[in-house]
Amino acid sequence: MGDTYNGVMKIVSAVLTGYTHLARLNNPISKEAQVRIKWFDYYRNHGGNARLTCRHFGISPQTFYRWKRRYNPWNPKTIEDRSHRPKRLRQPTYTNEQVESILKLRERYPRWGKEKIKVLLEKQGIQISVSMVGRIIRYLKDRNILREPLINSVSARKRARTRPYAVRKPKEYQAKLPGDIVQVDTLDLRPLPGVLLKHFSAYDVVARWNVMSVGCQATSTTAARFLDDIQNRSPYKVKAIQVDGGSEFESIFELECQKRGIKLFVLPPHSPKLNGGVERANRTHTEEFYEITDSTFDLADLRPKLLEWEKICNTYRPNQALNYLTPLENLERNFKTGGKVSLII
Image (cartoon, rainbow, N blue to C red):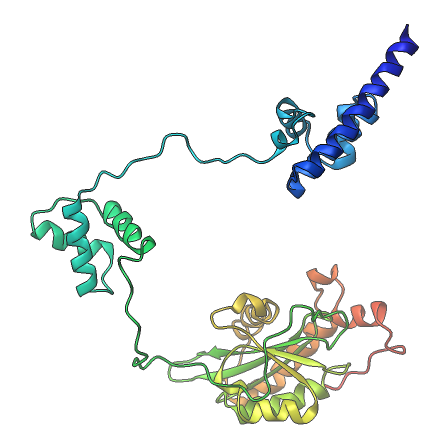
């Protein structure tokens, strides 16, 4: 009896599977529905084991049973996505008078928002909420009744300048080796009243290697000179530099990068998090060096101490991101450097 029952089930399963295939040909269904039909084909072909089906397709049992309750193998359309549109929609409660009044005000004052328009309507004796004003404006825009005016570019806002060499970093460009991306940034220092210093910092995102300099000003000339420090004091070839949109990283600095064959990636405006490595390094230099160093903050006194701090960062200070190795130990252990890394400090 059991063998006969199993044989009948196999025949029915084969008929249903074949009919489902025929139904798909006659009634084209979406790709999502085709995937769900594969669930139930697999489910039938494996003895109705729902858990095995869920593990095989990586779906939850709740999802499987929800679609199983809906699925009719004789009508594959039952497994299509349904509209989530509510059966009962909120009907507009505003009047034609309110719509006309808002349309006139918005056409006269196209840059005014719903809050200002609400105040003006109240002065006309029309009581209305801010949210309803917003809904009416959206209603007018959706039906092309209210059209926004063309904007004349007459403001004095700073426009982005065309960069002759720097580009946005391509998404496919990834830093895998030391020197692939060196983030460079500047930091304002005000250690004493009336004293303003500019700290230059370079941070390799792979090696966690630091190069630092300090001066009285941050210009494209001083930034270009900092390139010499980066190349001379980095134990690897610098292939690309990433900077923000500061003016010190334009002009001479940009031309110098092009001359040396170093890729120059410039960040979008207002995105310091994309230079997070050097930004965090600047905080470390501020807290662990500048705020606790006994110095007159004359450049002649400060620069030797900053070089000593750079050496400490690279060769002595354990780095949490490197599992408490120093950047020097990281280079020697994880990258082929031909033995000890030579330092030029």
